[in-house]
Length: 118
Figure 1 (cartoon, rainbow, N blue to C red):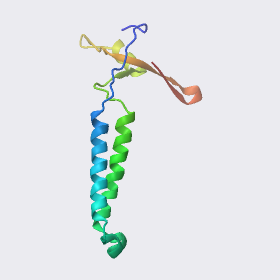
Figure 2: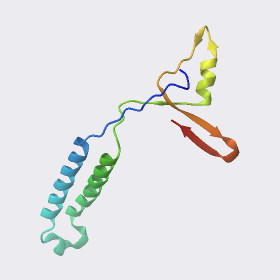
Figure 3: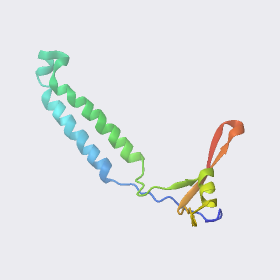
Figure 4: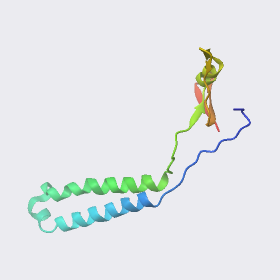
């Protein structure tokens, strides 16, 4: 593979996962609403139905996460110094070869900074 070759990372967005998270949120909210009639006044914060609040929070976090992040169907590799070294070695007549590299990791020790080139 040459440095002139461009590789693209395939990804897609899905409406299914955020939709399921939204349905979970609605279901949990309805369960919370149904459980908080007179019991909250009678038992205060010890009402068992309040445990649904954590499920509501989880559903909201899932909805936001699934809405903002893409689905990546495969694992991609970034070229590093170790990969270049492995490709240059020959062991028992065999050589290492890495295909599908989408970028290069360059370490700049002088500034203690890692840069990633795509």
